[in-house]
Structures are given as C-alpha cells and as structure tokens.
Length: 329
Image (cartoon, rainbow, N blue to C red; front, side):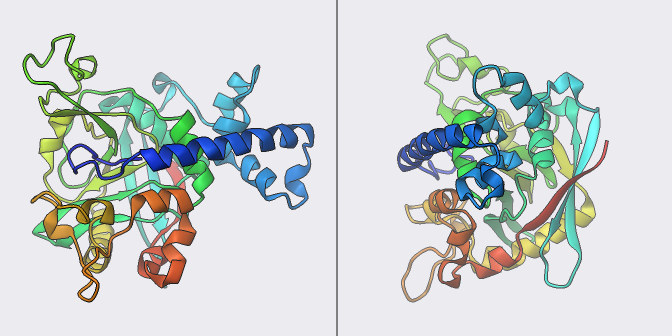
C-alpha cells in the first residue's frame, strides 16, 4: 500500500500490513466456504457473508477452481485491448450542500494496463466513501499531489493488496504535470553501475523506468492527481493514464487548501525526518508536536472508522468521495 514509497522515504512500511492481510484472508477463506455452501447467508444478516457478496470482493469469492472466468467477468477484469479508446469517470464528492465533483478522462493508449485497472475499480464502486487522505497542498505555489484509493472497507484493501496487486508497467507517454493522474506504487531501488545490466534490480522495468535511483512497481488501488509539475516522476515509471478537467482541478484545489492546511502530509512521512521536498506539507500540532496527517497504515487497516475516531479527521471524512460512475466512453 505504499505510495510513491521510495521517493517519499518508504512512507508506508509493509511488515505489519502484510501480517494483517494474511490473517484477514485466512479468516475469509473459512468464511467463504460457508458462504458458498449456504448461498443465502448474505441475505440473513451475516456480516461476513454480506462483505463477501459485495462486488469489490469478487477477486476472492470467485477465485476457486473452475471459477476463474466467472471471477474475471464479475471483477471487470478485461484485457486492455478490449477497453474503449477513451472513457471518463466522474467522482462526486460530499461537499456540504454543494454539488462538487471531478472527472478523470482516461486515454487507454497512454498506459493500457493502468487504464484497465481504473476501468475495473470504477465499475466496482471500489472508491465510494474513500477519502482524499493525502492532501499535499498549502497554496497555489506550494503543492504536490492529492492521493486517494484506499477503500472505506478494510477487507477490500486487504484482499486486493494480496490478490490483485499488478506488476505491469508502461512507458510514460505524457508527463506528471498539473491535472494528470497516475497510480501510486511500490518501488525497487536500482543498483549503481549499468542501468540495464542483468544484475540491476531495475533491469526488468526498463524501458518504462529510466531512473538510476528507483523504479515504481506494483499497483493496486491507490492513485494520485498532480497539483503541480512533477515531471521528475516520469523517469521512475509513474506513467499517467488520465487527466482531470479544469473544473475538477478547481474542486481538488479547494479541497487541498482546506485539508492540506488542516492535516497535510501523511504522518508516516512527517514523523521521521521528512525529505526537504515534503517538509512544507507536514502540519504539526502545536501542543503535542505530533503530525496531524493520516497514518496510512492504520487507515488501510481500519477503513472509514479510523477517520471518525475521536473526530480527528472529521473534515476529511466530510469531504470524501460519494459516488463513482463511468459516465462516457
């Protein structure tokens, strides 16, 4: 679940998260057997059955022997060649009494495997009630990205991380400048010396990644929208696959101004000597000295209840994504 991890100082350590993922899936494996043997379990108030019956958990429910084709269909798993050349996804937000939204226009040819995952999760409603949990924005001249994509239901985060993380890559066709959308990913560090030698951990990710520092690898459900010119990320393999329209960027910048100055950068990053490029986005409580930002590990593990716990992130919860809809192809 780390996002721009290498570039951002390993912002979400995986050890604890991996243990939680395995424990969750082992529990669900037993529950799934019961649900399959009792098809009406989800209709009789069984919370595990209801969770497993949700479309977003299709990757697990339909993963048994003989069900792979059905699972792919249920999950909107499509070959990129079967996607429309372009499509738009509208994200309507909770924004008080206002109708505020942003729309991502996806160009499939820019990064086909990335477009396919966006198509998939948009159809599944995976991001409904998801928060814009990483608002790196202080003002129009000091801004980086806004990131979202962790599901409100933690079971979905666990299952998709374990079963649906994809290591596909794409050569950047357009750049990470204002309004362009890319997947948040893990990273592998490159070794010194030849950038393309077989002994270089980054060699398998050429030519999508040309950096000698690190290569972005493995994406699941988190994506970010660039607030500024972040074209330095292109060399690492963060290939944009879509673009937010101007009206949507105005909405995201309004939200960024509120959440970025209230919470700021992730506490995972701000707690531990953040790099100079991210320090301006860290907001600290003047009384405790602690970061006010979201702990992304806890958010992934607990979902929406984490945001509402003690009202600490109530404003972020109030500005979450309401609906996700594929509106045009």
